[in-house]
Image 1 (spheres, rainbow over the protein chains, first blue to last red):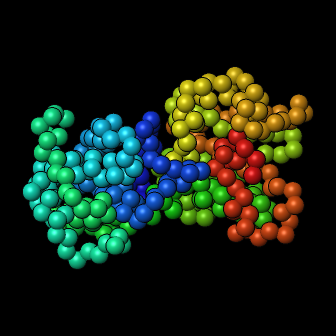
Image 2: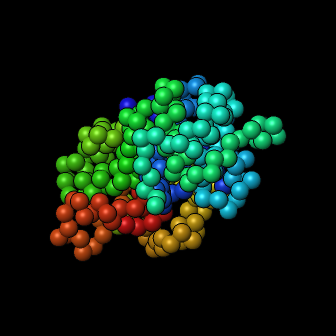
Image 3: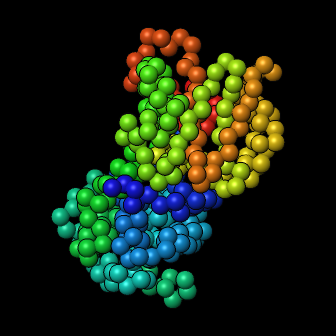
Length: 108
Length: 199
């Protein structure tokens, strides 16, 4: 099961786009960060894209917002990927974000 | 990527968690991901694949002499006994540290690394200085990384390859006789299993 989702390209990412880790274990500050990681892997797999399609956008996001937390750039890169590949329309993404349904935020 | 694409990038005003959840809902609706798939990936990356697996292997070998023998005889099979295996771990060789021998692993060609037991490699492991210097002057590099070895200890450097991945079985620390396997697991660090630290 896990074999198919473990991508060597992710381990090979270096520099600013390296996944945050501690003693080799991935570090997630909040559950959504882990889900964002998994979504990117799932989308790249499902769309049959090269990992670089995501990675290049992640690098661009991190360069554009170096102070932003890593996984916020990750999420922004994923949003760009799905919109730019036509998997999801930009309108739909904005619409769904402004009226989340069936989901409760931990934030007050 | 062009500037146009950038300008079309949506900038929703809501908190990032909301955005993540909204995106997941959309992708799920499109059939691109499913909650189960996402859970399985998180589990694979965060729990199943990481130095915790290697630590379990080491702790088992410390408490179970027969397991230790099997591990040193056929690393791949003994590691698979604990349920670990998969890509980048098809042919595992476990090398044992003793009072006379210190082992350390490197990949001089690229960044071959035993994923199923150690997870993702640290950045320094992939760096050209580590890769070249560990072969040329292992004692010096080990000393710089905090492992001082006396002259009587021989150093063996194992060069990983696409065919063979190595794992160091560190020496069980002194004064841990009373500890159980679970507690011992917590003493085993990633770096100790690469051979650049002691547990």
